[in-house]
Length: 452
Image (cartoon, rainbow, N blue to C red):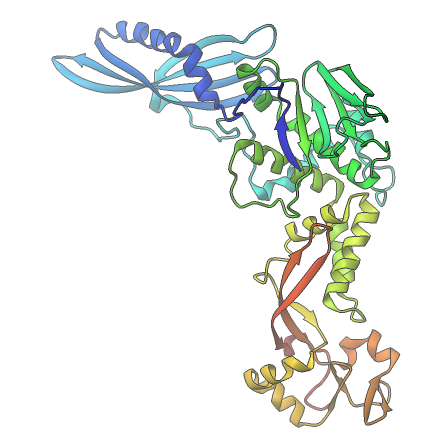
């Protein structure tokens, strides 16, 4: 998904404002006046002052508490010195307009630093490692758990739990818009089945519109993710929306558009809007596709030795999508986020199959493997080195075939290998892998390859 704030025609707002910028525009003089009054009580002559930084200390409910770091030039005992102050302030963002007040002034050293929990854009500061625990805390906070642990999370039921109303309608005939969350009362344009059938209707605060297109048949899996995505915006991003609304009072909603790229896991963000979108996608993914369930499905699929690697991955993707009621693209990204597909840098995967094209490379690189083969206890059949026993092999033409038992119990009779792969994710949510390397793995072997 891509996110933008709803704009009126002709509005080119940049949506990149900062809380520091907003404070300086409105309250810089009030803060400096408070510092000058404090300095006058110290019997010093103030030469000048400037605000160096704004540090957000606490955000709770309608209150934002912050410290303004002020540097002052002073004349003291016939000397000119620099002194820094910390001005503790509080801003209430409810009601008709912000209510600002200075709480106290002290030397900057006396101001406790505290953890930084919000960025200057009033977006929460969330490390990637914290998405899972945040998803858990959100579910606990709203006491929301499926009646059956094996059931998918119903995003619409969760939306109702947190006070949102979900409406399905055509708000974009071209289907570029997936959903829209109204953070304030506003208006929504709804399209009917005919070319001239257009209505502008009032939209209440706390309403999620899911775009159905003109056919009025939304994809259930995609809609489930979009609804949860909007729920996360509602929980995490009210302060960031409030800040943008200070610069454009016409803002009423957040619009989420379809994103063409399959993988939204960007290492850097060109804007705070992209970071906001990443947070909503990641936390929604953690809520809908619980880590334990996904790991169980993936690890079960990766053990399927009757399938090639790509088939195992795509089997896991399809099963996650079905069990969690999400799209295959969302399921594929979730698998990557959990570290199963780390572009060839993660843990090598266990396999018992070696394509003929890779045999020469392994023989040249690993003398241990060559030594095992020279003992004559294993036969190469159907891309596996299998123990030469009637239980596992049957003659076939000029060679051998694996028995059904051998195919389903490879750990008992076949030599193990570790393969390193790079995986490419398609927009449809399927994986295509490229083998980077494969090596003999005697540590994984349960067969006595020395004695056969």
